[in-house]
Length: 453
Image 1 (cartoon, helix red, strand yellow):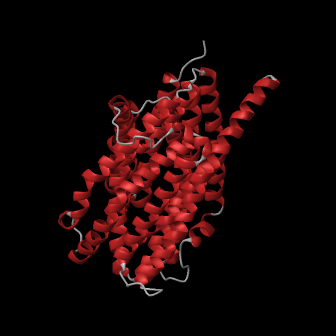
Image 2: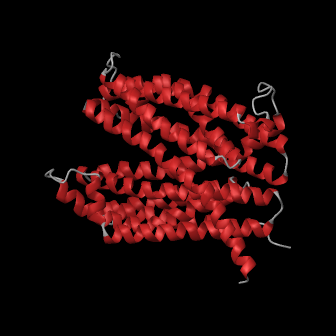
């Protein structure tokens, strides 16, 4: 390898990390929003915690489905910038915002009528009623939440990842403050319990949207894009492009999140201790996954720009660097899970509880299995980021759905219940699904990636 080539790969690594590190921080902060909601509702009451978790998970499923249009903004803007087409940057982002608003409007009746839906899914009447009261308020935040995601994608593609990070961090602080006021009735505010948590979510989403929209509109370096100028004017060609790229992204996210939701449901069939160990081990895996997700976002931008500019070697080098960075971090996580599982598990658990030894014993085994799927999980999300960078989403959606639901979930069920492996069999099924997704998606990218002439 010549020195110039070494410098080129080093430049790719620096650029990927410059984009990726703030995005990783943003994803971790977004996860902190969920964690703080859970903790504060748990301080209030067990019933409020159950209703809040039920409502938040229901909101998340619908959000993931609708987020595809917002997520499509990032690769489309990156490609337009690579071509030097600033008008297309505005057109694609604006139509991503349009589709996000339309989805939020169309899905709100589901939130309003959520109580009979939750009852039909077997929830207890009191939990269903409280969950529905949460969703009727939280559903008002769907539009701002999706618009925030679209604007974050737009700003990240323009290299403005620091503002994405700090607005998310600020949203965590705001969410905690409003939760404290409205869940518990502090500072002279009414005590609203789970409804207070829902209001806090809507407020933090609305304020985040306002901050990002003002930043995008008034920052001198971004004014040339005229993002909100004549916002009401339809651009049907751009809207069709965002629709075609976005809906498979939403369904892919739904398939992946559904894999883990289904695993939690089946673990509950095995036992309470096993479910607790599963939840803790999944939290540890999810924290590590945020790093890979941030790198995936960064490589979507890097590959999108190179592809838009017709730079085939740049596409491949950006991909190779992102894969190596993700594998390097994943290897550290594998070693940590294998060397220090008990300290990790103890961070999430009161070790004085009588159930703690049993939870830790099962959790140690699950973290060892988590080490097995850590690299596969990293590679499947990096592969999805690469494919979105070259604007390939439909076939990857089919690959992901087949891997997770055609093979992963059935394998988990058979190994856990038919072969008697219990919690271990369930996680082995996750490993199988993720390995298949990673291998098929990576193969798809290297076949589709442009080749140097």
